[in-house]
Length: 363
Image 1 (cartoon, rainbow, N blue to C red):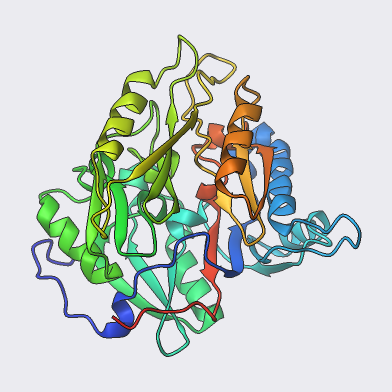
Image 2 (cartoon, one colour):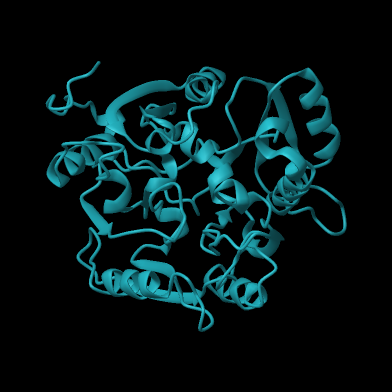
């Protein structure tokens, strides 16, 4: 077992390149075909339907030629039978399906954080993963990062910090956002100070400024992943949600997060420009349990942005507001109503692979 008080390891220049922002070009996006009936039970078919609609949104087919305009879809499938089902469902969407072990579809958290190197290769950052604070330990999740790294010939760089990919958000210019409720939670990094966690984030990603938000949405088993709370849409510009309806279960939290963002500055010293969109309001299971539904859990693809919807009255307003933030991309909504019952939405099940021609800073 590693020493939790061990000093931050020395780094080489290639390993401290900051991850590109999500709006930078992608070579591909990694996903995992929903393959576990024991996890999704009767909802598996609907989850697969939502998965395909996400992939269709990423592919962004040309209406005249039917040719995909988005990045390649690299899709893991649990076995040969699931692989064949996935290939049939994703036909025409520029999908490559490969059989591989994985615990469930949340590749944002179990897969590698891929960062281009100055020598033209990729670094696959591998953080310690403990099943979202020891909540869900699934066989195969620990194998996802080494498998993808091997497929890409990427150098794996391990880090002595429990961190899921959905817990961080970067602007590509030296700023990283995260939450205290997740990374400083005793169920992930017990005994570590904020200074120790910041030191490891800086060493891993070469960032200069870390913006800490306080907490997450009600019933979010990730303890407040940033990708359900606030997202960079450009350097110095961030989007978050405002409460919707008198019964919004997250009204107090959303107002507090907005105030924290408005008081924050980025690595360039700029006060963040904060844009708000509506929240989905109260979204519940059939039995009345509040779900951690979020419109900012969108995925930014090469030529499109896919926004999760929940059958809420605010769906279209949110899509239109997000479309205004990405004038060069087609912004589409797709249902994530069944996905969110599993704990997340579209950003949670995607992990982008940066394009090889990204301009990597030299200092």
